[in-house]
Image (cartoon, rainbow, N blue to C red):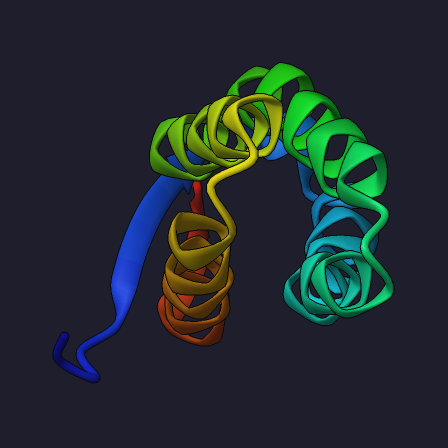
Length: 101
């Protein structure tokens, strides 16, 4: 994965809410890792479900898809996949930049 920015067009009406949403999301990779380490995969599934349902409503479709992948991997008990998805989520969140329309 590169380190180039990922610009995402977001409705200007969400400009006030988006920074807090992204700040909350930036804690999720560590939360997924913590869920794996504690053996509480239900927590990872909940994170994925929440992310999958919320991110797209902001306009972060790729982030929503990652959430869905996390939820699916957690349901299937795929620990290695969850670790990789936590890394992908971390990378995406480090590079995403909202661009307000």
